[in-house]
Length: 143
Image 1: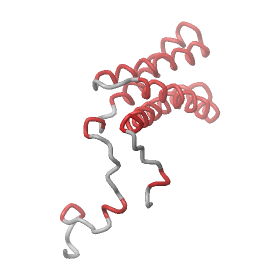
Image 2: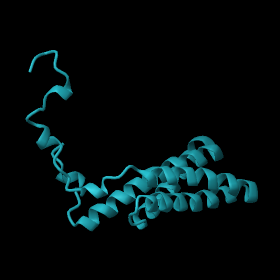
Image 3: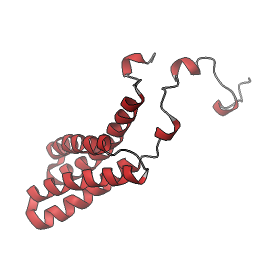
């Protein structure tokens, strides 16, 4: 190894220690369609809800759209949908509360969409790890 080598040109002996195989089966390492679906669903649902029922309609429509989008995205991957849908609700609510506190109603919509996307991905991964029976938690990592 020389000074001009790039990270792709060699491996480091500590890589296995810092980045252990987390045991996730190959079929469960997915592309994140549930997160894309949740974000798009939250935005679409909020837009329709706002047109129909004002700010309250936007909240309800965003939540329904986030769950629907997360479940549809996960179903497109051919997997279980419960974790993605549950995560989308939790993430969407948390994101909407934080976004609303920072920037009012527009912040709530954007925050809800971002939170739903993140929550859907996290909920799906948690479900997959639980199904595999050996979830890796933060305290198990050496870093």
